[in-house]
Length: 89
Image (cartoon, rainbow, N blue to C red):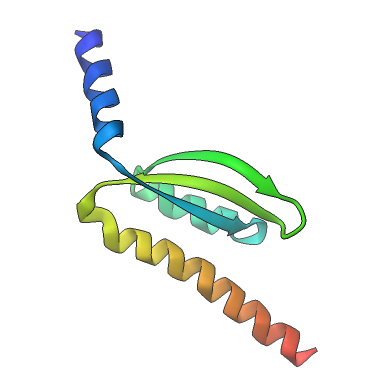
């Protein structure tokens, strides 16, 4: 029975779509919360220490495309907010 579940999981990962996100370190807890709430497949693929970002691969199904936009919006909002704060200084 476990072999059947393993096959199904591998097949699901092949069918799944994947998207790469460069997530600012300061945003990781909030970003990870969305990943956890939605039980998204994910891997950490690297880090950019120059920009303090973590590279994540997120697996999703077609009906979760809006969720990918939400994750991208989180990143864009973070940078917009920090850009405004830098302008205030």
